[in-house]
Length: 400
Image (tube, rainbow, N blue to C red; front, side, top):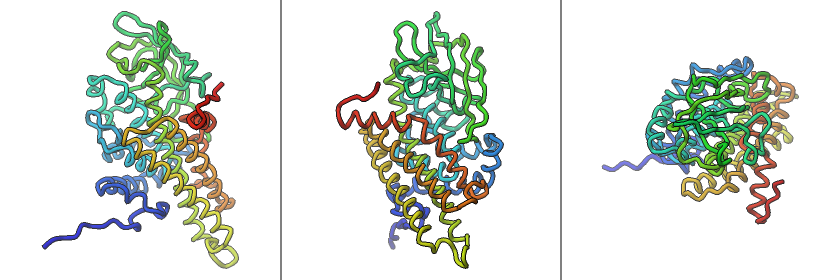
């Protein structure tokens, strides 16, 4: 007797996945996505508003996140899951659908930090660090942005690296570095004083001369622990220099991949706001009936769903290109521009649907509205990513 294989159903997906994009995944990847969704709903959503208010990171949840096996999900390096870009992107979306701060934490650790080692490290370095990072026994951070240099970082990195015998000496300042204050490994990008090229260094926790100031009073991603890093004659052995990073082009290779992760986070942020808005409209009554039955409310809900669906579709295709080794800078930049602009629009409409209640954390939408502002800016502003796409379209660079 033969058994027909189980067929996935659209009802298995969240109602924000209107066209069933999850059905593009293999069964084991859909199961992973379901586990992530259940964890975020069960463990994160009930506590995240309190942590957001206090500006504190829920360290107690890290062991459970580690058990999900999602760190470095796209990479096939030593100890890494090797599940590919599409499932990695959908997991990033799922994390941010409940809380963009957790999505950002994982994007920094599993995307930027692990990606730097996977893409720019030697085989020995990948063997040394990636398995423990995949198990989240070592947490990573990525230090590129500086206090006086943001969008122009490719042209003016001020942090320096000077060769000193069998090692290097780093000096400089970094800003907006997520995970930095508690990370075990910080990927520091610095300009070589000898040849002027950008190189990457893995600076381990407790290294003398590296100090942190956690940034306070943020209005977005308050759970993420961003820090300013002060590097004062920090000695790093040559064995900790990323052997495959010899110019800013190496940094860009990492950013191309992780920029797609941010595009997925943006769609997740928009999805979360949209879903809370839909639930609210069904429960909220005015004039003797639920506001979900009002024409103008339904108009806003459809606009939100259209944004979420279009962003998901664009990101799915780009992630497929990434899995095929065909992703270019302009592809990732277009996804980041589109996803973040439509995210901002969507969370604004969600807050509008909730009226005054939209600014209360108890309804969650206000948190998505605030967090969207950070996602909109990091990993390349809308303007910078627009110029990258514009250059690809016209063949003309409009960068100053």
